[in-house]
Length: 259
Image (cartoon, rainbow, N blue to C red; front, side, top):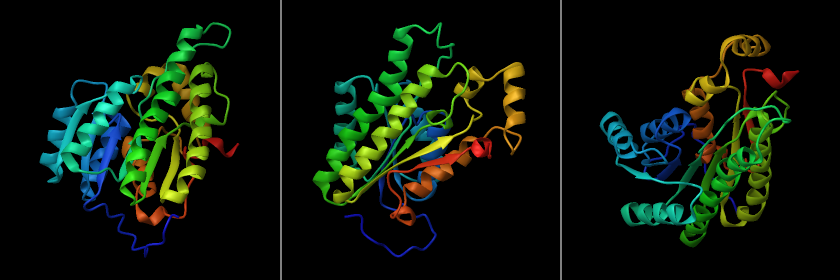
């Protein structure tokens, strides 16, 4: 059962251990900083080599304990080693923000199947691999927990040249719903946050020139999102204030999908 706790509006994570997969940059780093600001002990896990440096910078800025570790979500051994290292360092895991990401855009007639499979391997199977490993830790702990995955507006609308990305993110939403259903009895919330285009390296890679200006014109907010705006939604779904929300995909898109 997902229990009731008095809602204070503080979004407090004091004493919680939060793992951010994909935390060495972009939305992940913004989320890690927000978690730290709210009192969590934060783990930066990423395929990049700079995880320890990002963790140290956040610790210096926010005064909380952090830990950085390299992790490849396409490798079960790597994910298992990361989870074991976190348990050894902090003793438990209370929050997981799972946001590794891969995007490479082609029209459906042109995309190589290997490219589609890489999208699914990282954005769907890789995320599930992490969620499964952490959920099993949470279940053994018997304290419940919060799992938040970054999905995309592309998981439920059609966007040109996004077939591989959309396939992977739509699969991720299905995963979120099933896991939320199955893990609620253990007090675990599982949700997604679906951003519009975000001003990150991946966003810049996918949206340049005329396609960028055309896309911005279609967004009622008339701009792309910033990383901290997405991190704020992830934070809400990571706290007691959202205990009655599970299996959802929270859209943060500046109104793009109003149409």
